[in-house]
Length: 138
Image (cartoon, rainbow, N blue to C red; front, side):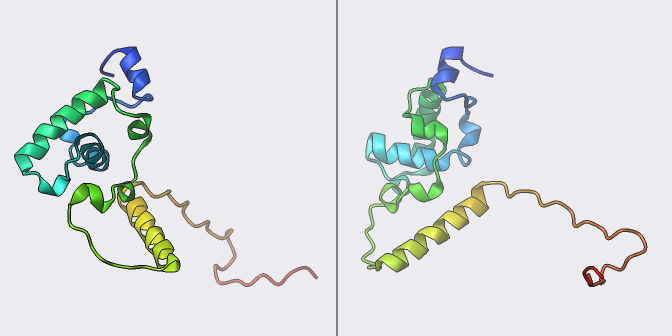
């Protein structure tokens, strides 16, 4: 779908995107804004953000972005540096930093990735109670 085979190859097999993917590709977009343009997402008006996103879409579709963009960017990778110029003066020790990273990853996974479908519980064989306690062998 969309673009030449060579462009699709450069996109690491990812489909083309459109302006409708603004929210779906927001992590990649924010990372690109900061890295390529030294622009913080929160500093942009809605209109300017959309104009930048149009440029991002063109680069994406032509396969002009670094490979990591096509491999998937975790929302936690978009540090506050790329979101706003404000610098919080919070000091964490290594343990707190590790816990915070785990929480961020869990939130990102729960928000942006599908959870595995769990199999329905198996029914006990006919004629047995689901409350039966196995007695072991005689």
